[in-house]
Length: 76
Image (cartoon, rainbow, N blue to C red; front, side, top):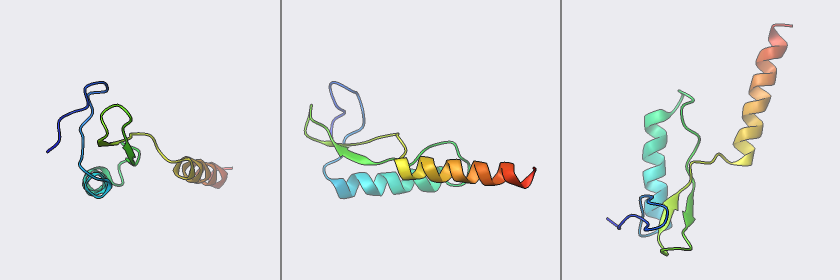
């Protein structure tokens, strides 16, 4: 277990694979509920460890917008 980042306070991981494994676990917990966007690993420039973002990818945001548009078209 890595120490939390001193600047951001986020949970740290030793490598990208470890961060992806944690992201996959978190995705399993919240899948299908729409509560959390996908988490992506990134290398922190403050502490040099890997963290997870809570920001959705642009592709996921676009696909969500398409889904909403399709739902709205059904009721027209």
